[in-house]
Amino acid sequence: MTYPASLVAIGGSAGSLQVILTLLDTINAGFSIPVLLVLHRDPQGESRLEELLSFRSHLVVKEVEDKDIVERGHLYLCPADYHVLIEDDGSFSLDYSEKEHFSRPSIDLAFRAAADVYKEKLVGILLSGANADGAAGLRYIKERKGTTVVQQPADALVRYMPDQALQQSSADFILTGAELTHFLQRLYYVSP
Amino acid sequence: MEPTKTIFLSDEDIELLINDMAVTYGYDFSDYSKASFKRRIERLLMIDHLSSFAELRYRILHDESYFQHVVEEISVTVTEMLRDPGFYRILRDTVVPLLATYPFIKVWHAGCATGEEVYSMAILLQEAGLLHKTLLYATDMNPAALAKARSGIFPLSQMQQYSKNYVASGGTRDFSSYYTASYHLAQFDPALSEKMIFATHNLVTDFSFNSFQLILCRNVLIYFNKKLQDRVLSLFDESLEANGFLALGTKESIRFSSVAPKYKQIAGKEKLWKKVK
Ligand SMILES: C[S@@+](CC[C@H](N)C(=O)[O-])C[C@H]1O[C@@H](n2cnc3c(N)ncnc32)[C@H](O)[C@@H]1O
Image (cartoon, rainbow over all chains, first blue to last red):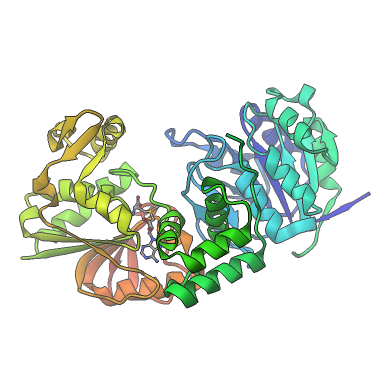
């Protein structure tokens, strides 16, 4: 089976970075579907995440700025302390409103905004974390016919977030970090 | 209390609401960023414990004071003193010395929210010995936020963070000398607010009202779509003197706007432009 996708949105918190780095190391060079990474980051520490990811990835890594257009071959990183949303024209909007689940960026918000725009052409992936953020967003994606993936709780460094997600809705796929690469390679790009 | 179930709205709901507000009250939100506007309204349904979208619509249409509350909730007033210290450092080191050369300085804070940004600027100008010859115009569409700004009273719990920001921005005095603490509040020195003028101004509908050497509009444009961003940046362009400065939020940019060619970004990473044409 292969699956059509216009955007892959990945949410993660504590314990998710290692999974993402492995993913970037192993994904083949032909992969060009835009990826949005929504990670809970420390707003104080001037983070080198963008550099770290660029170094590991053949995708163009970019920290989102307001009204950037979603492009193929790009991996977008949510800036610390802003929510990231998507508009109908395929541009990002940043938002500095209230935190959700004590988080900004909030995975729920990004997933919902992306699902409104991409509907069944969205793939949402939720990884390790110690927070309930993302679970409701994943359900929202599923209700709009998108494809949902949850990291197998036993495989996650911190299983709380995947557990929450599986309590709120059944995922289309429950995968280990290692299986994720293979899954992503079965996606093919379709325009929104 | 029962937790209220989140009600999610459709694009059609949002369009109806925007239309109602424009026709009934003359507030036009049609060029706001749709995704974040939708979130504001969904949040409103939740905090006001409304049972349906129809109820919200009815209340907005029939109760003007409720509509005022809606405007206040749509406006995201989250702000901080000396937010992004790196930005204030550049302002202090690069822009303030140039402002000093003018006999009379005029600054506009557009979308000042509860005013923390304006007090931050006043501190910078006072330390440079320029506040006495400055006027700080501070505007927002949200009258409740402006009332707080006018009072100069902020939560004492924030002062530790602000004091850190102050030091990181290059401040060398004792930050606590700028306010007096009483209970859980910090009252800022009235000498700082003497030169501030607060007024409601809506960037969607209102016009240029003066000319300035520095305009700050930080973290406001992110709530607008590209078309409205362009309108607002043109409004700033009309209001900015030659060689004046424009400051935006750290994730905002003028690159999509028609006025971009007239501006030159100073200091690499910070969002500060000089009007060169
Ligand atoms: C996040 S605050 C920015 C505060 C401050 N400038 C900062 O960067 O911390 C955004 C402000 O923009 C104001 N705003 C939104 N739409 C506006 C409009 N059409 N006209 C004027 N102000 C507006 C809101 O009321 C809110 O106070």
